[in-house]
Image (cartoon, rainbow, N blue to C red; front, side):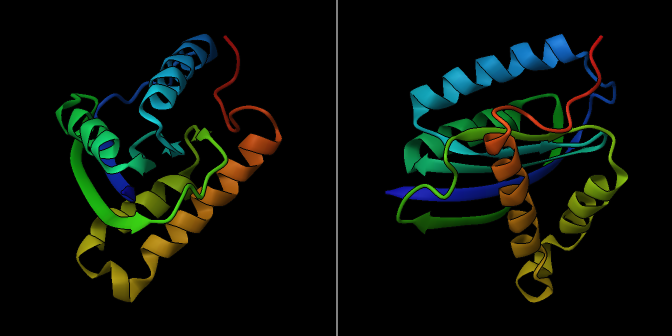
Amino acid sequence: MFISLIYVSRRTIKRVAPKAEVDATIARWTKRNARLRIRGALLITSGHVAQILEGPEESVDHLMERMRRDPRHEDVTVIERKPIDGYRFPDWCFAYWGTASYMDRKIAAVMAKHEALSEAGETAELFDLMRLLARESHDGHGPIGQPPGS
């Protein structure tokens, strides 16, 4: 069975990594996710992380367990977990990186309202935003919003 899982968390590391470091990290994650048959999108701001993971249930659960133990995250909150018929993302995407306050506020709002998300519509709004960013990233053949080169 394939599932889709969306989580949000607070970043414990506040520094913005140099572009070369970001590129190397993305390359590692892309290989790992391909091996696990995981697709989705990752959105990182200066203060928060939001990620959509899609794929075989055991692979998504394995990766989610790693996220919960990762010291770079705190307050890891699963806001949606549901079965899906197939992938909704063309591949795994690093959808955004940076200090954009709009994105940071969007993720913070989801974290603050995670108990009432179905009423607030925040989950669907975050999903749509991440899908749009992932499409832009995919069409542009690479991550968007990366930090400036160093």
